[in-house]
Length: 232
Image (cartoon, rainbow, N blue to C red):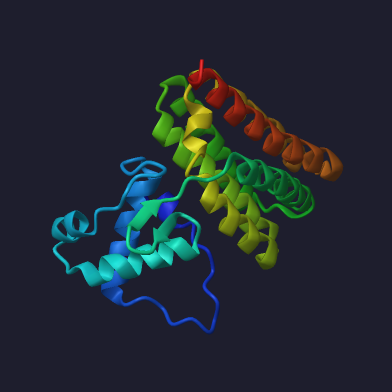
């Protein structure tokens, strides 16, 4: 499983017991299969096949599926089993709108407080995304894009805002790879990253906030464009 993607985790309520070590391992593998697209939306999760593949009993597989259901990636149906969740488009659009506000907030905060080390890290990721877009390495670009925004939220220094972003963005991963099905979309997205970062480095708080919000909404538009193109 990608280290970048595995970093996206919804916080667990304090009163809930954590998964067993074995179930946590199975959960990580199952999550990776979903996020890599090996299991698509609506697809049945074959407990027996997954248990055999991982060399475990079916119990940890069931436990992992229930954990991912709580995090919005899996749907468990009584007497039918577990399925990869199909994220309704209306819910995805609402999450994009929320994320636009959060990304704008984070960009504005960073424009007032970014450190040299943080700037260098974000600049390096933008450069790597430029190379991935040029070479049409969609999966590499996707993982870097996820990481870039996660780091922005972490650097902003507001833990509750970061937790909300991570919890909801995780659900969008069921759909977001479709946003970068064309090299043009990758190039457009990274041009926006550069504009945001330039505003941050210039200390332009309001400009950075506006560009961050605009980028979030442009991501929504790219997803809708990809969906429309696929239905033609």
